[in-house]
Length: 242
Image (cartoon, rainbow, N blue to C red):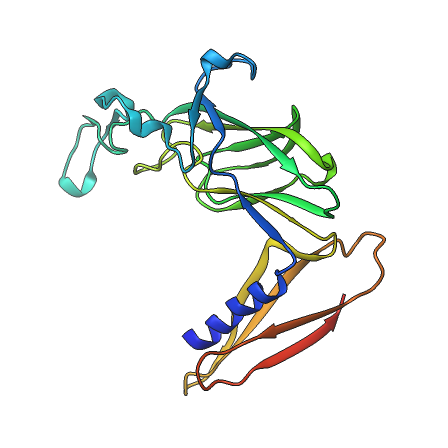
């Protein structure tokens, strides 16, 4: 089963060679205020990954709640803290930086590997996309804003009682600018499932991909998906129309 899964991962890598993935780790500014982007004194320079809550201060009121643990036989609610580390993760935060979309690319998306939480993304002050919650990666298509320099802003909002453990606060994993041709496999659009598993351990996997650009005025094309297996395993391929 592991060998087959490795082969599928190779498929995903092989068909994405035309894409460029640029890490956006430095050059970010951060604030907890509602300051304008040009109010430089209200912003601090940060690098990703970044978690605004770990700077503290620790305080029991940061995650204080009245609760009772039935398994412990508690009858009356008690004041309990420390559920999320007693760190100030609740509240709003904003990140901003400049991005440059290269000339001549047909697709440009922002890949966020982790943003806690309720992310709203803006490009040049215009709403570009959002992702509720904060535990999984998501992408925002910024192709429509065109090539050139753009101002990127990410607004986050952690609401009270939205987690039972310390979940962090902010852009806690890397962000990437992924550019490529207009027609290709969509970033984050791959779904792999096990279709069948026999008694001898042989598995059949199904890979479903979202193809970006397929609905645009682009001529029909052939998509060849190839994979390589390790050691003494055979190579294979399958082609389909787009």
